Image 1 (cartoon, rainbow, N blue to C red):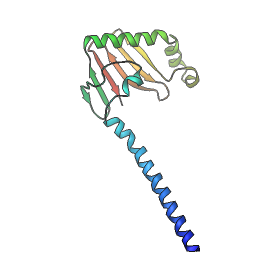
Image 2 (cartoon, rainbow, N blue to C red):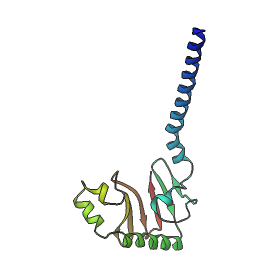
Image 3 (cartoon, rainbow, N blue to C red):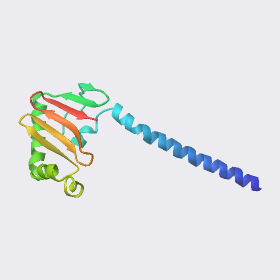
Image 4 (cartoon, rainbow, N blue to C red):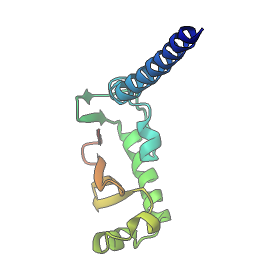
Amino acid sequence: MNTFWVILIIIVVAIILLILFFLFIVWGISKGIRNKFGPEWIPAELRIMFNHIDVDLEDRRVIKYLLSDYDAREITFQINSQINNENPHIIEELEHNRNSFPQRFPESFWRKINDKTYEFWQVDSNKLKATFSTMNNELIYYK
């Protein structure tokens, strides 16, 4: 009877370890799957709406969209409304005081570089996630 319980415990522990191993493997490759199959999360992340299915260029680091004039005007309007709705001093304060941004600033924001170029930044990682050029009607998302 004692060996029965030892074998049962070994089997249960092995099953639990196999389940944990499987979950770890799925979690590890999920980012690779997300990067490989479809950019459908990009409009939500950038907080703009556009036709995300027509990808013109995609590689390991970037996804590039060449947009129509209408889509480019719509995206420009959406970005400008986000910039105007956010506190206009956010960017200036963020540039001068990087130590206090996690509690005081949004996690990501659009920034107007010049009349033709916009950038989307993630604050927590201090990473440029996208650029939008109205001159070329081009949106580039950085993975």
